[in-house]
Image 1: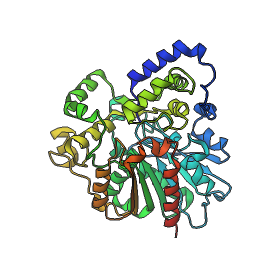
Image 2 (image 1 turned 90 degrees about the vertical axis):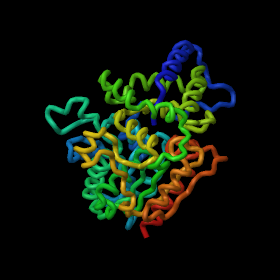
Image 3 (image 1 turned 30 degrees about the vertical axis):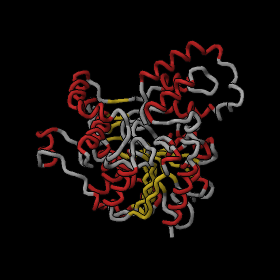
Image 4 (image 1 turned 180 degrees about the vertical axis):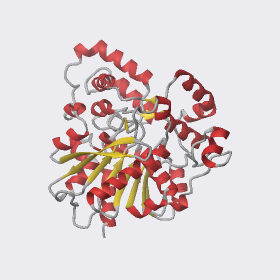
Length: 412
């Protein structure tokens, strides 16, 4: 999930202008639900809602240090134990510019906490570069240009692989369940196609708002940016910009305050989410102010470049690093496609016809390319179910109910 800084600055200015006269929420508008969650991290959120939190560190083959949070309830077993009898652990991975917080910010309605309440052993991975996973084992650490030189592929082949290994070792299990959202789906596909041995370690994968091909996506800015991508890359290189949408708690706190119910600035927050995510209803994103306090959490420029390349080429292929870079990395002048026929793990696809970033045609194309899709469900256009609602929506139960049902079926 990303945010437009221009709109955000307007939001802050308007909030500052009206900070003293916000008063109580307007008549008929419910106040924010427990705004204190805006100031809690993933560990604190897990504990606040009555589950036992753990923090774990995974180190990738290329030295990135990743934080995973583990949420366990009364039914989640003892030390090193499992959850429900026969149930594998569940590993969740967030979208681009987000963090493990996304699975927790709706309180007890959140997917991670619903899974923990059902007795599951829940693990939340933070991809390299976000607020929780900024360390590196190399001393001194790599310079920024090298550190940030990654896309969703490395999040899959390195980060996700290291997390799977850690979770299975800690839980003493041969397989796990996986739930990915947005970039978390692309990373999974990259991992299982490029390192197919990991297919055997996944009992079932549920991919929410999956992004592979970008056929038919409605994001209005993609056709404006994609033709100019080489020039944009050169300009950002010249400016030394390698990270986009960094974690900035002070700015996020201002944004959150401006998005609170009853503030005059709330209208601009709603405009922001309409313009950049297609969210039509001000009530569609639950606890908007709390969400705004946690997002963005940091992301590599390379991930956005890679997605724009996929969009422009209409091919789900590896990152184009130019002729010389491609020859060095792939042994060919053009990047190869991901071989999705190698993704043998059982997969469930859940998308929406009104998602700007993961279209229904693209989901059907992905369904046809994967060897084993146990279920593919697309929310009808009339529901106006947008990308953010898969984790932050007021109707998130429509997603979470399917996830719990599918993971339960896979335990048999």
